[in-house]
Image (cartoon, rainbow, N blue to C red; front, side):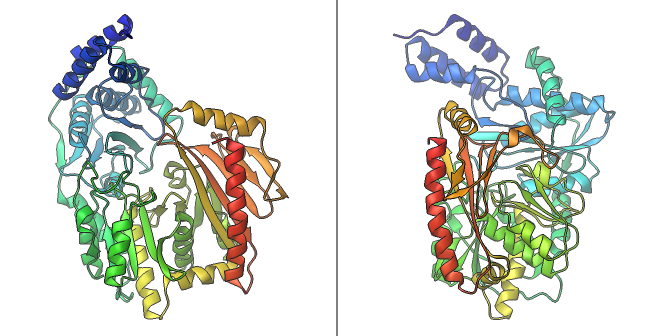
Length: 550
């Protein structure tokens, strides 16, 4: 029978004595008892939970709820809050406001309250949202209230057992290096002592509906009074916090109310109708698609649980399907260019190259960034930015981050305008392909339980990269080396005349992702061109899966 290692037992008992949360204290006591009895699952959980601290990075914190330094809990969050306070105070921000928001996941409100109390005790001025709100509403509040930082307690579209902690600075964007490392250093210093030493103060301010009112007013201003508004649409909040704000924004702009997926309309931290509350996951929007077919809708729209992402489905090729993130990015960019939106157009390195082609053809500056809106949102004079993972920034002056709610408004306005002309979303996609060429994108995604599988796969394509893909030579670029255009990142780029692949680990989930593109020139027979592109894509998928060894 396996025995509990004495050092691990001591670490667990020390943690339990310091933990202010009765729920995780009891959970840890149960794990220790079970491990003492030789329970293999309990031994494995303890070993993993105490394998090291949950790493604070540009995505903040994200992980499984539970006791231990490698989990999301009140100890870890309290230390993160104290580390953030230390970072802000060292930069002369004493007495300055910090907005704190949260979603409806398990313990999000508790983590947000702990953060407010610790920041208040440290001499900052926390503004705590009174109820769960979408992430973009909180991000909007950073600049609206002149905050020096913002915190959103959310794990976005992760499984229900997870939670997370996103940090923004006063420019309204998520943190980037070196801020992440500097905050992590402060967290490490705080973590040297017991969490009970951290002071709490309940003298913080509450933010009520004034924040939502201001956000709704700004969002509604994006839709001109003369814009078409006739359409039929379906909406799902994916068990998240989007419904109440979406309802207000839609009413303020004069669009008709949606047919709502009732089973997913209200916040539920267990996400009972979906295995993963991510609109990109297979099956996640099945209820929305069924309702769209039933109601004869023009478009179906899904937000992820914290409403910073937006997915769209429409009838394409005679049947309902979800658009890829790149297809929606092209539609929104094309719409922005038709509206005369000036400025730089930007997307991440793993997104389609179509946006760059469109920007060049229309005389707009274009920028490629690393993956994540912490980079896209910082592009100067950003007219429109997106990443293929259904994240879009359509109003950077107000929200320098992805915003699934203003994206929803742009989609409603576009769909209504197309309706008024007797056209559809599929028609507009055809127009874009006819002008700029076919850009077919796809993705390989490998979810793993052993993270070493990801590092092994990346090592494999670094040491023995494919020299040809789909029968054509490819240029091989190790993105970890960085360049004038892009800072270093863990990824490999393979690019030929008509094919492209980027392999990289996910920044928020235990996944290895490979982003694929087949590009064919514009030609009159779109149907034939798309068939050819799909045939090439099928081969490209197989070749890259083999190269990665997964």
